[in-house]
Amino acid sequence: MPTERGSSEDFCAVMGKLQSKLKHSTYKYRHDGIIEERIQTKTFQEYSPAHVDSVFVIASLNSELCVSGGKDKTVVAYNWKTGNVVKKFKGHEREITKQLACVPKSSQFFSASRDRMVMMWDLHGSSQPKQQLAGHDMVVTGLAVSPDSSQLCTGSRDNTLLLWDVGTGQCVEKACVSRNLVTHLCWVPREPYVLQTSEDKTIRLWDIRRLQVAHMFPPKQHIQTYCEVSVDGHKCISCSNGFGGEGCEATLWDLRQTRNRICEYKGHFQTVASCVFLPKTLPLMPMIATSSHDSKVKIWNQDTGACLSTFSLDGSGPLTSLAVGDADSLLCASFNRGIHLLRVDYSQGLELQQVAAF
Image 1: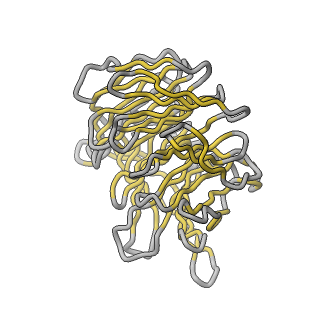
Image 2 (image 1 turned 45 degrees about the vertical axis):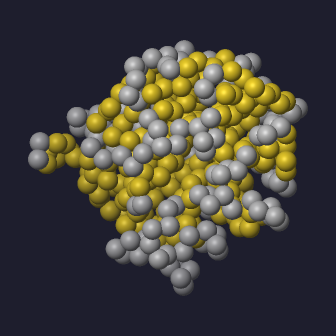
C-alpha cells in the first residue's frame, strides 16, 4: 500500500492512493550543444517501501517482477507494475551484496551476501533457500548463471572464481588470480564465457570450460565496478569508480575479434555503479543507461557517446543498481529512498520521468 516518506513532500489522495509530488531536474541535450534544464513537479505513485534500509541491488525476474536486496539482509520479489510485494526471502546473516542472478525463463534466482554464502531461491517455493553454496573465504561480489541454467559462476574479494553445478550444488572448478578482487560477473549469451570486473582496474574474459582467463582488456585508470553484455553477445560495457568527474565513466568494448575499446561515456561526477543496454524497440539509435553515486541516471547514444538525457533523483543518495523493466521502463535502486521506477518518454524527443517508488 502507498506510504509517505517525508514531511517536506506534498501528498494528495488520488483514487484512494497517496501520490507524491517532488521537484526533479531533467536535462535534455540538443543537437546544437545547448543543454535544456527542466525543473518540474512530477506526480508519481509511492508505495510501501520494499526494504527498510538501503537497497544495493535490483534485477528483473520477468516483464512484471523484480527482485532486490540490501542492507536489511532480505531479498524481496516485487511486482513493479502493481506495487505489490510478492514474497520476502530471509536466510542471509549479513547484508545482500550488489549482485543477484536470475535463472533464465525461470522463477529461480541466486543472491550473494557479506556472510560469504550464495543462496538459491524459488519464487514458487518456500521463503527459505532452495540451495546454500559455501566456498568463498570473503564476501561474495559476483554471480552469473549460464544460459542453459546448468552452471553458476561466483566471484569474491578472496581473489577466486568458483564454478558450480546447479543441479548438484557442488563446486566443480576453482581459479585464483592474485589481487583479483571481483566486483561483478556477467555471462556472455550463447557462449562459454564469463565477463568479470575487478578492483585491480581490469576486465577479464573467462573461458568457463577450463575456468581460465581467455582475454584481458586494456586496464583502466580506475576500479571497474560493473559489467554488462549486450543481448547479441557482441559488445559489453563496464563502468568506473571515481570522484569529482575523475574516472566516473562507462566504457563500451568489442567482444568479438578485435576486443578493442569502442566508446566512452563521460558526464557523471561520482562513481558509476551500474550500466545497462536499453532494448531496441523503436527506430532510434542504440542506447545505454547508467546510474551513479551522484544521484543521476543518464541515457547515452551508444555509438557516439553523446548524453541524451539526465534525470536527477535528488535526496536519494548514491544510486546503487539499475535494471531494465520492459521496453520503456527502468528500475533504479538507491541508498536513501528505496527503488525508483523510471519511464523513458519518447513523446518529446527523449526524457526520463519517475512514475513510482517503492
